[in-house]
Image (cartoon, rainbow, N blue to C red; front, top):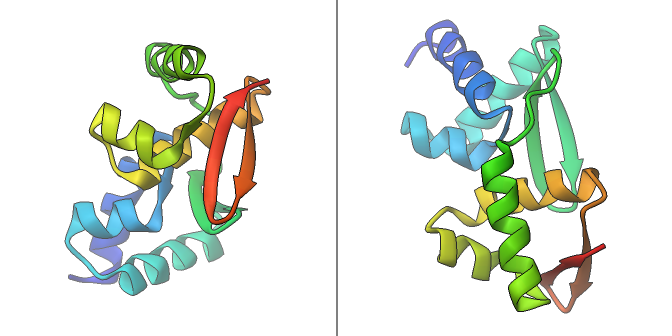
Length: 130
């Protein structure tokens, strides 16, 4: 797959989801993680996207006005956390039938909005209401 062609497809994908991980892009475009990371870094050098490093995950977003996760999705996550008091990323990913990285992305967005707090315990992310 040609770099320019792939990059032109990456930007609309990132625009659609606002924040994406390297793994999500690699899976969606059927390329290796290293290739996806290379294309993302090239887009960063072109000042089209920004990398946000969050403890073990690279998140990528466009250099434009943020588009938040839909309120409906946020509310589903928050309701699940309220119901269960303490949850793990894996538990949410399994319950909502999404990838671990996508669940982590949504949870990090909620953390940035000061709605939840992450507690790291022996290799596990635990999430609670703030």
